[in-house]
Image 1 (spheres, helix red, strand yellow):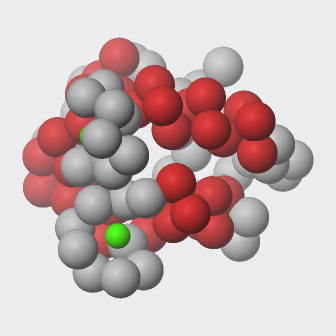
Image 2 (cartoon, rainbow, N blue to C red):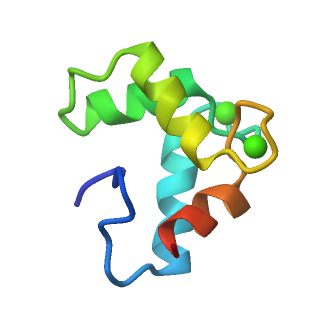
Length: 81
Ligand SMILES: [Ca+2]
Ligand SMILES: [Ca+2]
């Protein structure tokens, strides 16, 4: 299973799956996904081309309150677009 979808490619978003995915990406467990955590998660998913600035751009695209980090709500809102 893919760790992260770039553009809401998942047709059936499941909140339990999303939460597990979020917790896997949030490696320090503080409830926020940072660009660094996101980049690491993508690399673990086999996407080694993602640089920190690409990860930051993806985060910025999903970040609703502009704090450069994703909460679960922001993560989930994006999956459900
Ligand atoms: Ca974190
Ligand atoms: Ca945010």
